[in-house]
Length: 166
Image 1 (tube, one colour):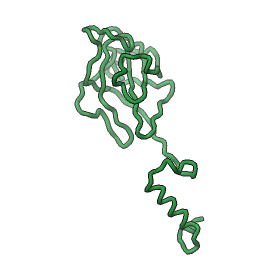
Image 2 (cartoon, rainbow, N blue to C red):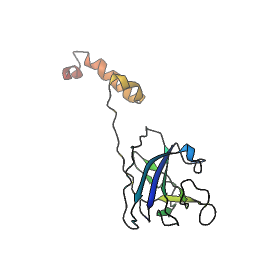
Image 3 (cartoon, one colour):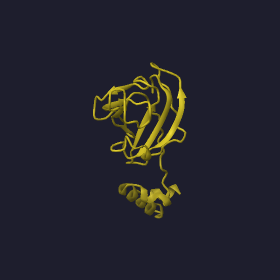
Image 4 (cartoon, helix red, strand yellow):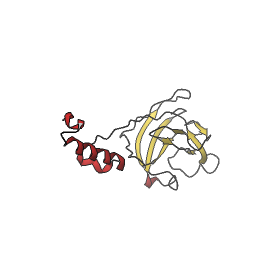
C-alpha cells in the first residue's frame, strides 16, 4: 500500500465485503501497526496470521488508515470487472473508505464509502500443491481418480510396463 498511512489495520471476513462493510462484528483484524508515510513507494503490511483460502473460497479484505483526511491510502477508480486475475487468484474492485475510524459511518463529505474503487498495491501469496495419497483421494477430480485407479490396476499385472516401476 502507499499513501499517508499512519495507524493501519487490515481486516478480513469470509466470502465478501458485500452487506458487511459497516458491521465490525463480521470482520477480524489481522494487522495493526503504525506506518510511516509513503506516498510514492509501496509499503508491505505483513499480516500477523497468514490467511488461507481453499479452492473456490473467497474473502473480503479491508485495508484501513486511521489518518485524518483523505490521504491515508491511495485508491484507483475501477477500470475493469476484475482488478487482477491469474491462474490462482482474482482480485475484485471494492470500496474506498474515507473515515479515520474503521467501519465509521461518517466521512469528510457525508457518507464515507466510495464505490467502484480498486486496490493500489501488491498482494503476496503462495500456492500449496496437494500431494496424492489414499487419505486425500476423494479431494481430487473424477478424471484424476480414474487415472489413479488405472495405474494401480496396471501396477499389479506382471505383463504391464507399469509393473516394472515398483
